[in-house]
Amino acid sequence: MPKRRSQIELTPDEQAVLLDEGRTIQIASNGPDGFPHVVAMWYAVIDGAICFSTYGASQKVVNLQRDPRVTAMVELGTAYNELRGLAMKGKAEIIDAAHPGREALEAQLSKGMGPRYGGGSGGGRLSPKRVIIRIVPESTYSWDHRKLPSNVH
Image 1 (tube, rainbow, N blue to C red):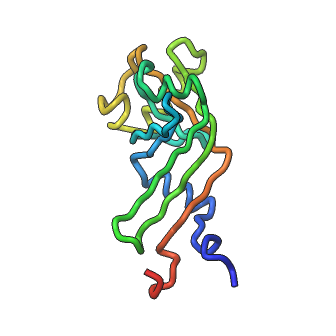
Image 2 (cartoon, helix red, strand yellow):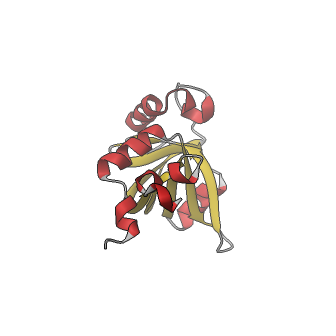
């Protein structure tokens, strides 16, 4: 009998749909006190990477400068039998105003996020005080409780 985990995993196509439908991602970095520092961010997927903007002096950026390892999670659904999610582990790249590829990435991020771009400003260029965080997933795990038999809930 197959393990339940393999029965409820999202396929790569289902992962892409989930990321497209999601709007908020939970980002966990390693805090200075050794505890996880978890924040919710609006995001866009650009060339397979999770991207979002934030202020360069924020605690999450300070954490990522010290240790670029990060876990990110998107989950959708409100009832147990509707829950589906994707958690990704990877390393964060911090793209500041001086980065040569920033302008192109900014344009893609603006298009991907629409009115959520720039902290809710809905467009234009990012302030030089903001950075773009780019996370390329190195490993993932996922779940889709809609795939569970109805008598399991």
